[in-house]
Image (cartoon, rainbow, N blue to C red; front, side, top):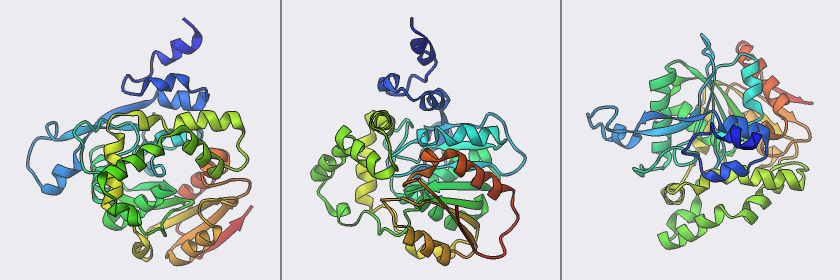
Length: 328
């Protein structure tokens, strides 16, 4: 048995076997820590059906903190059609800084057991996160949302303000108007389109768009990491359900956000213009904007040290008294 085989012996059996092909040591280490915990099915919660927790829950995937902190639990979301492995570089740095952090898979993506095929629309995603927070965290959290995860965080903070102490939004996708015309596609066409999302060429191209100066070898390995969750049997159903539900349209919610917010943006983002970073900083009531040089759409992957420092400093700071825009 090789050393690599010995390491992978401890990876959770619910991960697709293709996880063994991943070379990135940080992704491998974080994959070993992914576990499934029971979370009440948001569909039953919304219907207010009074049944036992165990009967109407499903196993939701996440990386749990190695230790608890008396305050400032940090909950890390991810972007569109991604997973908690997106935090493979930043998670250990935040942990070393003493943070209590949860890397959570958004309902419909990641590695949860969705054999019961719950609805995966905006409302269900929100209530899934609420049930997870209520069952396991139970204290106001710092909610971190990159890309579409920022829309998830915005929507959650408006609807469950008691659960959110502060927000961190990274290259936030909050100005798109849902899935648009894609929501009206016939299901057979929707499934055909969604199946393309897990194709290697498309994912590889997306990596070149998302990251600033990525090497070919990294692009190949990061493609394997980014599409790993797509190999689960319910992924297509969950993604189509989200697409035809209309997706996220949170533009009108932005000015309702009252929580102190840190905005982080990669200066070389080719997906979402920096102009929108400045607009977001203006429209939020209590925010600061920090741009990271030589970083693209996902700076927590490309520049984990910079993102970690910003988050740690933000968590430890008091309430902002004025808007600040910092360019480093």
